[in-house]
Length: 174
Image 1: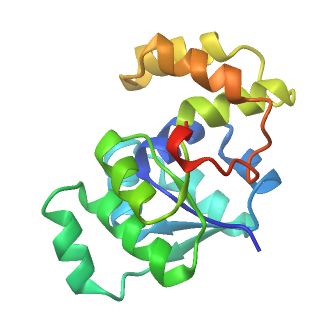
Image 2 (image 1 turned 120 degrees about the vertical axis):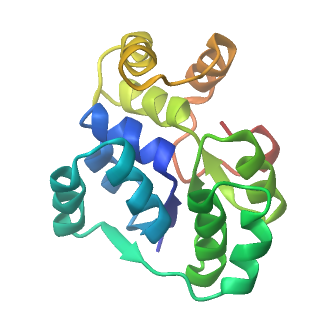
């Protein structure tokens, strides 16, 4: 079973582009931590769209159990990222969908396979689920203040040939 945890940045971007449901092609379960749900609802203001993802069955709500680990990580990370990393351990997730650099560093130390928004978009485009990654990135930059460098997008395009879920070199995760 391929289990992923998703952070708010990826979730907000993918929902904004109407591509979040495409994650079901790559993962059996995608857990959305409580703090990510709260941040999504605060920043995206579209509970309806998030609830539709939960109703579809692949996206699932999850609650934190290990408050001590959460508090340790929350001292250096956003609450959603910290909870996501703790949930990855608790749920036996192998994948973490996250953009923020510091959370990615911690996730790599935990042995997680990381995918960011740019990498996911590149794969969606390659498989025909989306048209043009540069148009998607421009849209996110303009409408969601998405901060990603052109070099990161170019690296994501270059790695798009590698199927999601089979990317094992954790030091080059995109």
